[in-house]
Amino acid sequence: MTFSTSSSASRRMLVLLAGVLAAQSTGAMAADAADVVPRLGMVALFPVENLTGTQAPVRAILPVLEAELARRGVDVVAGERLAAFLARHRVRYTGGLDAEVARAAREELGVDAVLLTSWLTRQEGPPRSAFSMRLVSTDPEPKVLWMGGSALSGDQSPGLFNLGLEGDPRIVQARALGAILDDLASFVWSKAPPASACNVAGWYQPRSSYSAPIDLREPRTVLVLPFVNFVGRRGAGEVVANEFARQFLARPEFRLVEPGLVRKKLLDERVVMENGVSLDQARTVAHALQGELVLAGYVFAFDDSSGIPQVNVTAMLIERRTGRVVWESTSYNGGDDGGTVFGLNRVRTATDLACRMMSSVVDQLVRRARASRG
Amino acid sequence: MSKRNLTACLATLLVASAGCASGGTKYHDRNMDFGSLRTVAVLPFANLTRDAAAGDRVRDVFSNMLLATEAIYVLPAGEVSRGLGRVGTANPSAPNVEEVVKLGQLLKVEAIFTGVVREYGEVRSGSATGNIASLSVQLQETATGKVVWAGSTTKGGVGFGDRLIGSGGTPVNYVTEEAVNDLLNKLFR
Image (tube, rainbow over the protein chains, first blue to last red):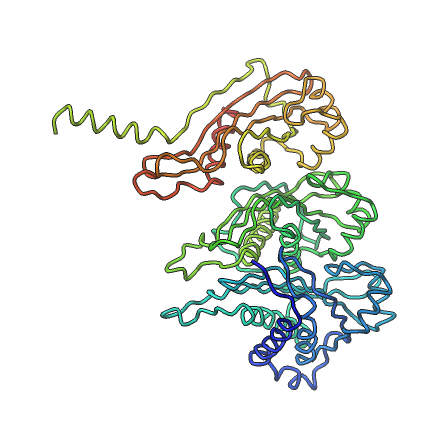
């Protein structure tokens, strides 16, 4: 499958995206919020990270994002000013934020936070689109303020006589973006939580798991390392790690360390995790970032190219203090595991499936920890 | 139905269900105190199948299910990989006795598991398909490098139901889980 990235195609996409987003967005939000103070001031909109495993017009989508954020009352720094900043500081990786770049962004751009966007799925026939976004503060120690995700498929709700089928990938894409931007606006303008956990259902529980007693009475600081990727799809390890990060952020039992800080530390310490993390590596990174728990793992399947998505992930949580694995689980599911009747309950994208599975893993981890405490 | 017809029917059923594999073998060292094993390492499994990731997949399921028994602590795969690199094992899936002893000292484990994945994934029989997992695993204590337990199993395959309905069989992950369960039953029996 190929995607055109020519300028005419990009322009067409821009127009369509803007149209669909305008039609569906909560346009009144900014106006209603005139007497409400937003949670944060200016936000830098970093270029979109491409984790689709294929080509994606990441540049073309930026102006649309900028306009839609402005319509939702979020003050954004983007365009030439941001491009000059990124060039000046030689920032190439835009999937995370380290302390150095955060400080520079605060001082030079005057922003309170940086919005990081990852494009997770882009597919035609049936059209599928998934995004994740993370709002990271530009404090001396950057913190994840909010995290959201959205995954949609054109055959999500076929409805009666398939009247609900959507065949245009650009419309599906725009709807997915609209949903996530609305979530972000809710966070900025109201008291919405920093992240919301995905649906937890019995059939997404891990197939096997090990749990050692772990004390979660006080919030524990957790680092999420990139997962080792055993599948052909580029970026699958990052997508799964991203989903785990979101689920940790959604629970009060954990304090999530910004994944950009973890990545920087791994690079600084020259840590290469070819076959998974060793205990020394986990301890080194955790010690440097004051983390108590380190999550790592393996992705054995992450496929939504066929009709029914498949995900197979093993995750392990290592405690820095003891240097031991305190949790390990293996999960594998297909999109039709939820007992579908006429395809009604089917999960259509691997990203959505991964979100439900990771949420179930974290949920079971917390429940077991509570149970072990009595 | 005549006796002859009944025999013919039973023979047909037996032949039809013969593809559904099971069984396997095991060896237990009678002098070994398995209760003394607290920490073990699972080495990469040798892969004799066409699926390049079969060894890693089966090893992962085996490690996780072994840990989930809560009888033995299993070192993370990354830590085992570090140990193999430090020892300089020529063939990580089949270390020699000296390497096993060195690994034991370095990783502080009492025993190591090695394994071979002989068959994994889809098999065909006529127009019917099914999934199969066939593996053998052995346990070597690191004090002497001696094999103290070995077991093999084969699960899945093309069964009678697959021939009759043509469903494509049980998913390979479930078959692997079944095979590993069988091995763990043999280990802890």
